[in-house]
Image (tube, rainbow, N blue to C red; front, side):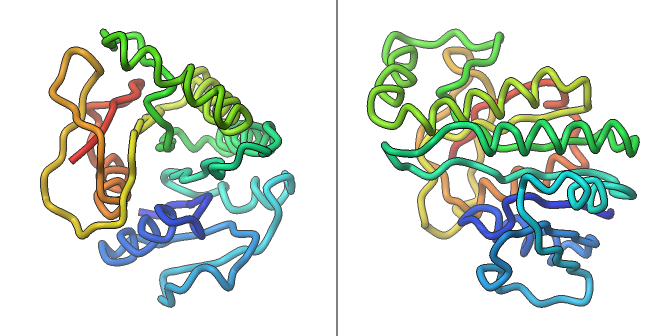
Amino acid sequence: MDVTVFGGTGKIGRLVVERLLDEGHQVTALVRSPEKLTAEDPHLHVVVAELDDAPAIRKVVDGADAVISALGPAIDPFLRAGPLTEATRTIVAAMHESGVRRLIALGTVSVPDPRDRPSLVERLVPVGIGLLIPGALEEVQGISEVVTTSGLDWTLARMTAPIDIPSNGTLRAGFLGRDDVGTPMARTDVAAFLVDQLTDDRFVGAAPAISN
């Protein structure tokens, strides 16, 4: 498939690009800092642009079979909210303009899915995050709202605690309070889940929580 990736220089985004290339996909990655993208492959096309460059976003989206967004805010208490939400809005508009339907994006469990039946502790998670890193929470909420109201064939993968460990081959995906979903997840497995959604329609129009 021809897949456009946003956020491909992040910790998970780099793994998404590598996984896509390993599976033989054609990848177009829009990045701000190309030196952070270490993958080299004839099937990888890197476009250097800012996330507020709407013409560049339209160009990389046009002709794609799907879009994967690994955009996510930094864990910074002084982070200003807004740019990633606006970038996601621009991506969605470009997809509608180009007729690209499949959108796979990254989120966190601080944003609920209507199918969740969260415990009290799970309900308190976004409260704590909002106190510690309010800008990051606003960005995650903004991105999620744009994705889930996009009118596209979207999937929003919600993680809790991504960690740098090798893949353990165990994946849980479902909804809080209803399915046996845990907390930590290897970043390699987060990336694998995002890529797997290209050929899996179980979670189209849903925001599953994922873990190892």
